[in-house]
Image (cartoon, rainbow, N blue to C red; front, side, top):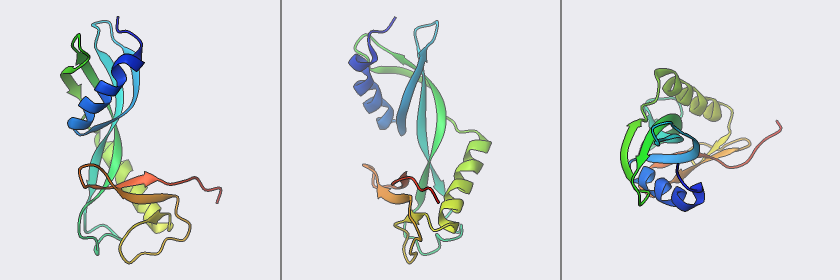
Length: 139
């Protein structure tokens, strides 16, 4: 049984980030001691998609994945399984981005003035342009 998640979550988060994942939550500990983890991986939207023709670098959308992670006694990642988004998750991510663009909810695109932005394009630590929630809208 693992100790309190506060003792290992920062190392888990860092280890996952080094492998291209963003920790969302630790879902549960499995019977073999491994962790089931919910995370995001980034999916690049095709440059020829509407609204992206003027962009100089790819735009990425976070896509949910489930991982099985095994940690050692120092809480470092020993093994990682899963993490491949389903075809449906990739399709949904592309549709999500298109809906934001079509409805003027995404700020940070070149040559596009958003109507009421709820999301923005941010650079992550790897220099990738990622869609992130800015705020909520009641409209």
